[in-house]
Image (cartoon, rainbow, N blue to C red):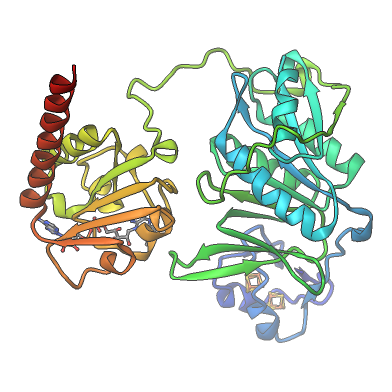
Length: 406
Ligand code: FAD
Ligand code: SF4
Ligand code: SF4
């Protein structure tokens, strides 16, 4: 839908300029001209005394959606290692493909990555489309988006799933714009509508206070990004067989406008929260930066890593890569210990799939206790040192056992 001024009818009264809430109308040569700020709200149409403004249907290129078949997963790899999120998407993609009765295809791009195709098949892909080329060694938006969008136009998949990693968040929108389809970012649930077989893409909306289910009715593929850690990993099946199709890559250096000169690792150590089997997380209840030393001590003792709520990140007590939740990382460790975290819905969105949740909070009414398997009501400055001490005693007992048995 677009708004248009019929120039011949416009008498230059300027009423619409005052009426527009978005400053989207300029007077040029005594005629109203709509600018790019227009949201098509329609307020000016009503206001014009001579009916000189109207809504215009913008024709969208109609596509025959029945020509699109199959589920694709972007098999993101870094330096020849498949990311966990790709395995998670293969698990989810497999379920969707089985429900639709179609093939599951993994799209693998890189340089000298042929050896990874078998792994993708063992994790559930029926087919791997392999693009192996020196210009695909390092990820570039232009290179990867060109190859994948041309592939989509050629082979027409009905669904494409991409991990919401830094690369996936860059690549997904670029592909969807190129192939003129929609993309639902950060989905937490994917299902197939039993009746019309459309992909139901569910994600948190309005600050996580409600879940919105989004469909893409008229365009293909239906594209979604899914955060790492949200879906369960596919099971590795040694017996699986599949097909590998190596495509010819027609990229040239001129296709890639941004040149990657160097890759510099962040000075601070990466926090592998999504992979960690044990996370000890601190919230505003920790009280200050120093308090996180205690959280770290417990994490170390258990062989885990430190997580945090957004409140403690915003307070500057800990860096953002530690943040768990809707705007942080989604984790599903075996053990999640929440210390001084109230359990806001945006925090729960990132950790409630953990196998075992232990909450330490001095307020017995804190919502975190509703999702906790074990709740400890108390001051974390008493409970956490007591836990560390108990673990120290376990260590001593184990040591004593070893000595006795040796
Ligand atoms: P609080 O809610 O202040 O809770 C502190 C808790 O500590 C309280 O329950 C208190 O009883 C307890 N406590 C205090 N002292 C002690 C003590 N000595 N011992 C034991 N317990 C104690 N939040 C996230 O965490 N992650 C996100 O990704 C995220 N994304 C968001 C996105 C949006 C769009 C919005 C609007 C919000 C987001 N939030 C996120 C913020 C979220 O709404 C909460 O504000 C935040 O999670 C609160 O953090 P908290 O539990 O540490 O702090
Ligand atoms: Fe302004 Fe709304 Fe008219 Fe667009 S449709 S010019 S936003 S009043
Ligand atoms: Fe022209 Fe109508 Fe706007 Fe007046 S209100 S300037 S006639 S478009």
